[in-house]
Amino acid sequence: MAVQEIEKNKRYKIDIPIGYNGNKRIRHIETFYGGKKEAVLHENELKLQLKNNTYVNKTKITMKELLEEWLEYSKNVWSPKTYISNKHWCNNIIKSIGHIHLQDLKVKLLEDFYNELRTNTNYSDKTIQHHYTIISTALNKAVIWGYILNNPNNRIEKPKVKRKEIKCYSPEEVTELMQAIQNESLKYQALIMLALDSGARRGEITGLTWKDIDFKNSTMTINKSTQYTKELGIFEKDTKTPTSNRTIYLSQSTINILKKYEKEQLEKKLKLGDKWQNSIRIFTTEYGADMHPDTPSQILDKIIKKHNLKRITFHGLRHTCISLQISSGIQTQIISKRAGHSNVTVTHATYSHFFDNEFKEVANTMDSFLQSKII
Image (cartoon, rainbow, N blue to C red; front, side, top):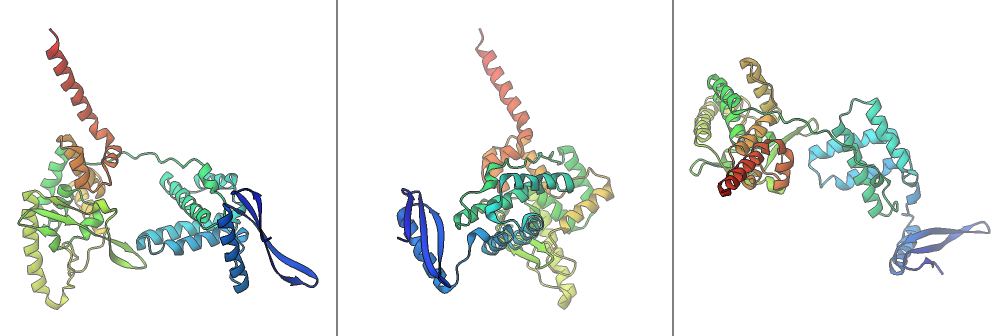
C-alpha cells in the first residue's frame, strides 16, 4: 500500500517504488501531514513528478533557493521600488544564512542572525525589523508550499522599533516659512503651500497632474504617485494603500498660487518650444521633464538653510498639516480620511501625543459640567 496511516487523519507514510539499482529496489518514502484524501492526492502528484523527472526534494531546499523563489513569486505583486528594496535585503540574508537548508533552520540560528545584525552592523531598528519581516513572510510561504511544517521565525519576538519623535512646525514656525517663501519662485511657493495645505505625501505631490486639480470646486484628487529607482528611473505607481486614493478640498490661498504657477508654466512652455519635454505633471524640471521624487526635499532644505528656519524633512510638512488640524479640533475621522490613512487607529497611533491637549480639554469640559451640578 502506497499510503499507510501512521496517525489517523494527521500523519501518513507515502511509499512509492521508482526503480532498481542492481538488485536493490529504490523507493521514495516521505511522511505527509494531513487527511487521507489529501495524502492520496499528494501521492498522485509525487508519482507524476517522479515519472516526469520534475520532483524537487523539499528537504534539500536552502534559504537562498526559497528567497529567490519567493522574490520571483512576489515580483508582480509589489511595486518596482519595493521589489528592488526587498531583493537587496534578501541578498543580505542570503550572505549570512542562504546556505542553510530549511529543515535545519532553527530558532537559535535565526536569533543569532538578528543579534549579529544588532551588534556588527549600523542598521537601524527599523531595518533589522525589516529583515525579520522578510524572513517571516518567506517562511510562511514555505509552509504553504509544503517545504516545511512550521515557521521557526514565528517563535521569535519581532524586533522593536523605537518610535521617533515627529518633527513638524508650530503655527508660529509655519508663519515664518510662509514669509520666507514670498520671495521664492512660484514653483517653490506652490510646492510648499500645497504640501502644507493638503498633507499629501511627497510622491503623491510629484505624481500630480493638472487634471487632478479642480479649480472650480477647489479640490485635488490623489490617485497615484511617482517613485525613482536607479534601474527604472522615475515611474508612476498606485498610491500607498486603497484608502490613499482621495479627493480633498484646498484652501483658496493654495488654489490662487496654483493658478499663477500654471500660467507661468504655460508661458515657459511656449517660450522653450521644442526644448520643453512635455511632462503631464504639475511639478516639473526647468525644461518640462518629470520632477524627481527627491527634489521637493532638496527644495525645502534649500529654503530652510537660506532663511535659517528649523530643520524638518519634507514629510514633516505632512506632519505639520495633520498636527495643525488636530490642534484646531477637527474630527479625527475627517483628518484620517484627508491624510489617506488606512483607518483612524493609524492617525491616533502616529499622532498620539498631539491629542494630549484634546484629552485635557475633555477633562476641563467635564469639570465645568460637574461643577455646575454641585449645589
